[in-house]
Length: 333
Image 1 (cartoon, rainbow, N blue to C red):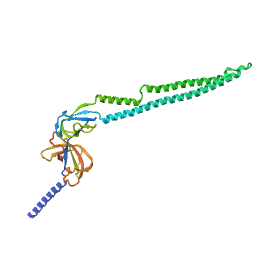
Image 2 (image 1 turned 30 degrees about the vertical axis):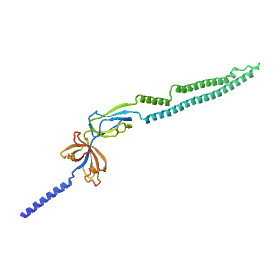
Image 3 (image 1 turned 45 degrees about the vertical axis):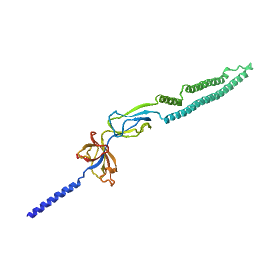
Image 4 (image 1 turned 180 degrees about the vertical axis):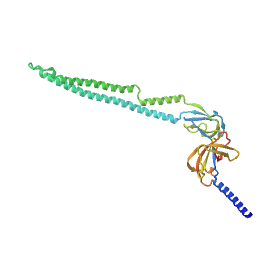
């Protein structure tokens, strides 16, 4: 009987151990690596500038509105030459435009003269016809010509004379409109020429303008991409500026981890240098595809692994370093 009880007790213990072992084996620990990232700002200027003096060095902490560098805005020779070339091109177009208007006036005059000549010939022919018919009845004493006989011809003459008058008025108005364009400075190319000349004059009056580039917020100076006395083209980076503390952690969830993560999910972000330093973070971004996990963030660096990128927002009052490697653990809800 004692042997039987011992058997059942042993069987029960083995079952419990197996249950715990299997249950533990089914559980997946959701933990992966990431790195802390600070918001980076590229400081540039929207005009070509010359670097007069650099007041900071890489890695230097600065406060908001601290001066970073002194720069001068100077129009480059290339831009001035380009403006001069554009003016020459526009001047040529302006002359062509003027010649085109003068040619239109000449064509109008030629058309007018031709139509006037045709009308004059028609009027002359009608008048000759009228005179001829009148001459036929002048020697006839017994026949008195009715005046109504000549009315159709006279009406045709009157119509032609009126048409001639309207033609002259019409062509005069067309010519006047073109001459007004010429005299009132309506040449579109001339307007552009005057604008460019005004810009050049303004640049000559304000050839050098000095500015001080200030820190947008508290932060750290990153890389400086220029040197003193260097001419920098518009929108080229002068220096990189970082916020003082990381505000984001980026990591990669291995594709085999069967977890449900969405925006708003909570994770514990822990420093690998000091396990006692950790922060609670919130998911603010999820990648839309599976990508290769960077070597630095792989648990087994020699093996390519793939996962989904995740961005986690953390409090800015942390002591993590820029690009510091951290561990990321899911906080069970």
